[in-house]
Length: 346
Image (tube, rainbow, N blue to C red):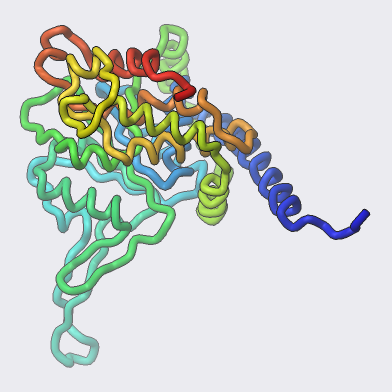
């Protein structure tokens, strides 16, 4: 028998150790975040998944549910530089990206242009009420999300990684808002619905926020740790069967009438959906499945991972028609029917 160590096995063993470390870190993160945030475990987990996948997240919820506090607390537990921008109708692109200013040279040798970075140059950006600012300003934010850089004049400035954007939207106030176009919403990995707390959770919130004591979470991971963990997530293997299931799930969101070729129509899609999900949805399902697997201490992705992520990945990528609105159907209802119709095996 050869005493030579298999380098592949050695590599896999190291990765498995890192997966275990990430699972332990998740529990520590939950514990630290739990000092400040009551409940909302699913929202916190999805935020962490988005971070690990180098994606961005859209939070949907009424005021007062702690969306800003959740984002700020997660940034603290990961020791990330955090900045918050309140989006308003008069916000300009340069208010986010930064601008060139004229300053006098030392010694009186004339003037020069100096770039003053905007709040987008950070690790963790909270774009509060992103739908309250005009499309021109929204586009400046979304370009940076996609390209990880900002162009001012003839100069392009890179944004240091990790870079994570959490944008919030208030679903109950539509007056004076500028809804994000579907093509731009598609750039968000997840659309997360923040629910009301239970009575017990609400009582705990009231007790914890009406006294004199305040609790601050401690950092569990550094930005360098996060960058390494992002690489681990991308190295997780996925079987062809799971990839094909994700692809068929995304493909099934598109009405047959808008597709070339033949495919068995799904009634709820044909009736209520005008446009289905883009290929970004399949990428998000698999990447998020990898992150979910390693957070749970597994080094493989299964069908259940893809199914559990279908709602936050697909809900903002389905464009419903007037029949859906008339029948009081939302995208989550359509996704429920879709998951029942698309089988794991082709």
